[in-house]
Length: 366
Image (cartoon, rainbow, N blue to C red; front, top):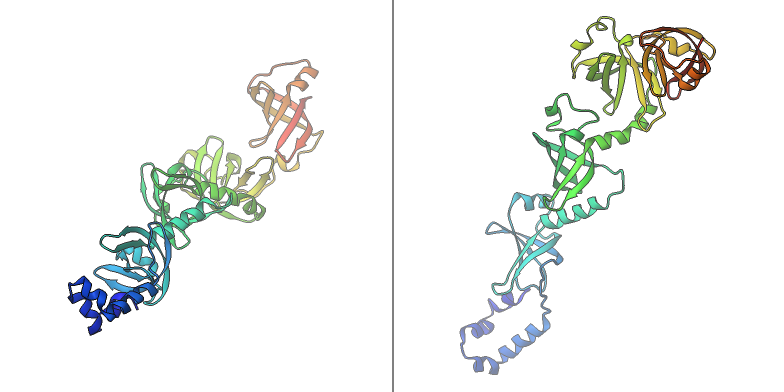
């Protein structure tokens, strides 16, 4: 029971508030009792920035009201959605943590906030996340530079932004396709000035690649969509985080002569032909045609008819078939006493070695 409740309803104590004579109050036995009562009550002084455990007492005058024993007044919070959403499972009489954001001692008014407290804790938690940890994000809308994002963390919603360049493992063929979606992202940075996190979906997807590659199977059909084409093949994104290439020699015969008509976003079915693991991100070779090629059976010492593809500073590249390229290194050129060939020239070559990990074939001229 607070002091006001003790006085009101007690005729002897109410007399003190009606009598304007200070001396009369001093002489009164009731005054002495009241003085003792004040001395027995421990008064607490709230301070801006304090976090206190307060009892929720209800709503009054569009304010959420919380009581703390020892305070001269209740803590009041504006009844806004941003605040009341944290009280969905709170009943009258329950205790919750409240942040004191302003104290008006002259008018005995204490202003608090639950939202600011929860958001502050969420910020601290996000900034202490371990490297490689992800958070859940909801894509609200799109603009020319990227996406307005909500981070959903610890029961709190925080503002974020995702540049369109890191919204996917590749450039999104349909930028609007992820609006309204909720998925995992990683935090790139935090702008103190804007109060906004910069997040990356690409970084999260890249973290999945090693485990997803391990799960791939040969001779099992996969579905994906085209991200781009070149004169020599088609690039395909699949399993959300993987990208591979289908060489023109391995494209469905119905499309082999119409690669230019294949557009980003086309759905396509294919098989895993080869996985090259000599780099941080494995290189995936795909095919729509289940058949063996020269690469599948090539052996050291094998003699093959080839065509010069390109002349490089380190040697001569030759086509062994439509999808297989080998190298005649400059050191081999010196051995045969010849330093240059012409592009398109036909050569008979012998296989010196095959590095299947990096898909490299080293040759010499017969």
